[in-house]
Length: 148
Image (cartoon, rainbow, N blue to C red):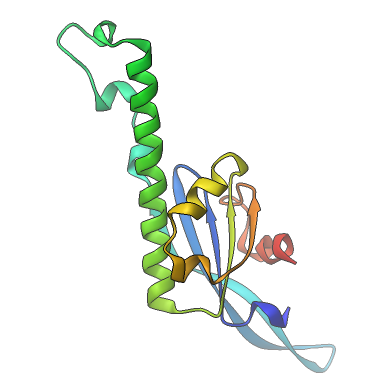
């Protein structure tokens, strides 16, 4: 588990992003001192746009009937783009502040490549492993297992 030393674990979904710093702790196990690596939550951000319904974002006096279906699809694509940009901005800010050696990344498969493309080069260069999975609800004690 030494590979996780000085690293960050990023978990995210369209609704939130959590970032953990992996800390090394010495513990006595069977009368031996062992180094145990444990992620500690350092940032949790809700992506507000994801929690809104399309009707809360756009409406007209006549209701939603005035929108063509193609228009609605385009609005949904724009919302998704804004959510990806907000998630990438949050991740980049923490990575810049913490300056880890490595970043381990998990985001749902259907949006992973798009989010990776929105990360600044100095962040994406630190990504050691990216997996297509929503690990936001996984207990922190189990996170490292997904990146081994």
